[in-house]
Length: 588
Image (cartoon, rainbow, N blue to C red; front, side, top):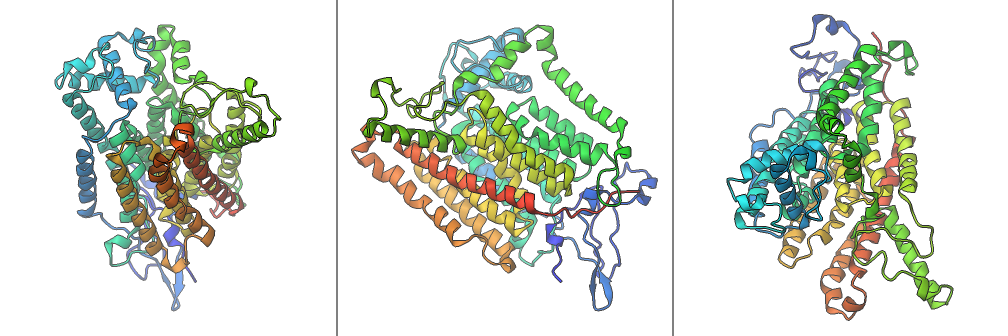
């Protein structure tokens, strides 16, 4: 009988672990230092059981399967050092307007009192991140003045001296230390039976490479320029703490993350439902349903206090100043329009494309009046509100409804079909993907919010590995337009090629007994990305269409990638909705 131990997560520092002894009849528990002795007599919780592998009968004797992974030895520091060196080599590369955005925020938080942070508008790149990130910029500014004080002058728009570039690049690299630590913690939570003699076949090693060397994160942070690394570090660390049953720490980390960057509010339903179901309720009935009498008022009070304390530290000063409405208007600028200048590859990209096609057909057959149509409203590269030509125009409220409706099934599954950490991760990924698919003014970079957590599942089951390959390849390709300068063309192609080849080869090796990870149609779709890139980067710039239809490459990339991401989203949803609950009852 095939054992499913490869699909388990184990706890590092306080969870249930596999016995190394071959003939052990059961698994033993390794209690954390702070645990009271009486807890050793409690029945394992539902999500802890999910990480346990029951005894396997072989030759008339009970055999416990040894946990995989072991220690990371010296390979993890080597991986971390290697990717940090690569980041240093990328310092002289192209940087986007986001570089000026963060330089301006350094100047604002360094020179102005808190009461003026969210009112300053000398630059068009006004401060529109939550207060914790503003304080983060303020702290960086006190180091920046030793590199080049001119970067801290608010009026020095688009100032980019060598010292300024060096400081901002190094600040991203150094703050990525938190991301490296979070990856290490996540790797400690992953175990499986696929041990193998080769290091390259260990799930821990594969996961570490997929996270540390993630192509999308490398080009977005260290070429395009942003601070996503340490933010994803906070998220992954909170996930690891939930795996380790350190729920309060996980909740606190996520609450802090929300006040660094509010885009993570999209995955808040997964955290809220999981903590309520697995932490605030301490037991299930014999049939696996929720035992309402097990609700702990103390635990939900502790969670509430954490959320209130973090929110008070972040928003308190602005509430006292009476500036909360101004802060909210900066955080949620609905006047920016449905889509970004480059359409994120989501449902609205497909919607826009259909509207554009219908408009062209309408003009050709004279169903529409050309004088009443907006010229290049959706493809002019502007960040603004626009009206669709044929299809109904989309409002922020409509996108909110679509997002909520698309998230609800995953939340219901997490509540009614709890599957421990795996179920939580599934819900988190679906929340991220659903918000990416239907959110208002979604940036293409937001796809990383789903790709990185999916990495944890990709080394556990073949079906998740298949989804990961589709979503990652398509999502990373959709980031190519961010790097549009000629010197970066070979860099982005080489980096993505290396990461994609490793992803396919490592996951195929990890699940070689499961057969092919992709079917022929999926392979055909992904292979077609190659001629699409050749057309966009080589053929189109040399064609006469470049002057008449400059938006064609972006439109093709966005729409084609939207098809793949939509397919991955639907495939994951079908898998989650059809999967039966496998957790045992939780009781004392």
